[in-house]
Length: 156
Image (cartoon, rainbow, N blue to C red; front, side, top):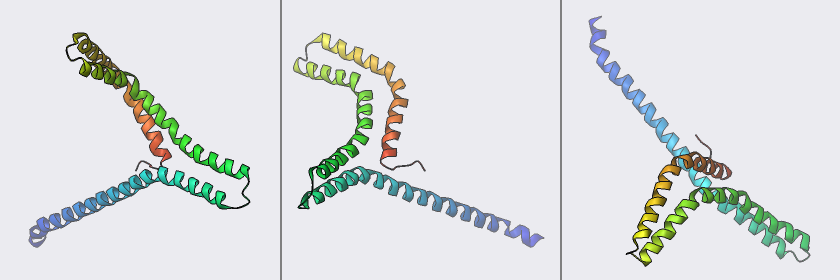
């Protein structure tokens, strides 16, 4: 019995080491899989449009290619772009109104740094942004998730 008690710290250290090693292995595998999906998502949009452009141009090389085929291939290129454009536009619409106004006010202030009224406009716009920004978070997240899903990026 005493011999077993003497070895308990060694056993505990061994078990703890095994648990830590298993945990670290899982974390590294997760990170590797996440990075692979991330890199794939980044390339997908470019590759999809590139493939459609290549296919459309391959059709142009065919001597007897008819106009209907050329038109449908060209439309395929545009359709791929359009499938992503909605998310880009929605995201831009969420981010643009007050931020565009703020940018314009900064430009005006840089043109006339002594215009005290312009400082007040900037303060007012910043106040509006502070009040409206929290409500934009779910909208931004939704659009970013939609865009990532279209790129083939899934949550792990």
